[in-house]
Image 1: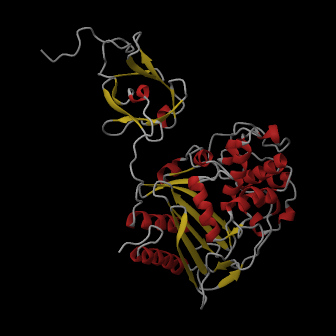
Image 2 (image 1 turned 45 degrees about the vertical axis):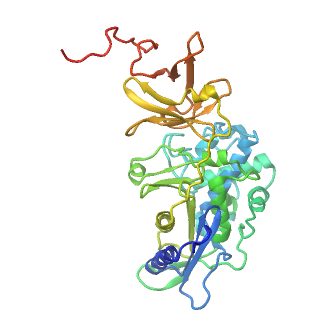
Length: 461
């Protein structure tokens, strides 16, 4: 008897429950709730609570803090896809007078705009948003702390600016745009800017005693696009599925993939941690697995969304305490538990629907100098180039429709792959960004830069 692919095995479910139970107990969280997503569907839900009786379910709201930033980034990417802005545009073009106008939209999304981490004045997360009614109150007199584009410096004011940009170009409040363009199409009916019952209360847990203190629940006002949202594990599970596969009603799979691509220079410490940032998404390499998502925190609440696209597994973890369990580690462990215990079953191999002889002719073994490469035609119609053995430069290439191809990633991203033919039409060699690839190492009949010794290959005599 076999289980359906939607179900997790009993051993996997117990391992997931054990992980969140340890996190709640050792992290001393009043409550902790988690959901695992596989194949675009929620397949497991678990909760632990310090209260007797029924624990929180997937419909209970928690504050999700900076996961809000990913929602704001999606709104900005929608504006880009509609042609209302370009990611390379300086902010000044669309939102003049901020004092941070030289930063580009992409730099704001990637936290490389040089802005301060926090707004000036009292701690914005525990004070009313009415204290910061204007962008100038959020940015201060000197918004820039670092040269624009030079380093990754996480900035809450940066996402406030992006929210204001959305409002400017849409002519409507950020909250209204969010509801109409993301929450309603994706069916996120339990995600809102204000708490809606049932919702958890936010608590501070004393660091040296098992005692609790209620945290204030402030409306962040102008800072809302950086961290205002409340949500549930059920809604965030659907949002995680969207971040993996896109949704034509909101954002294409190509644009979502762009958000998941590193866009910020990594600091030395980030390199050691295997962490970087995309466009509104945190990116981390952990236990050999590439994870994307976002964490969040506000006084009284912690949140994490973690996604492994390769494993097709995501996890959402929420808790109602100011500090305690490390939810990023918990989320990564939940993904790992499922991915290792029940590895993704690949789709059946299927041949190409159509075979273009001129493309098939490109496939096979090629040499760049003496380095051996293989060029394969993939089922999605791309070309995939990589070394025959060991590590080295790899890339996929997309057809330009004129017999040439454009590199999609790695060293050859954006580079032109040109198949060069002889006068009789036969294939001579490949020209890839000035590199000549030949069917034999240093083929003498090919235009190898620097030429090939006419005496050819030889031994030591």
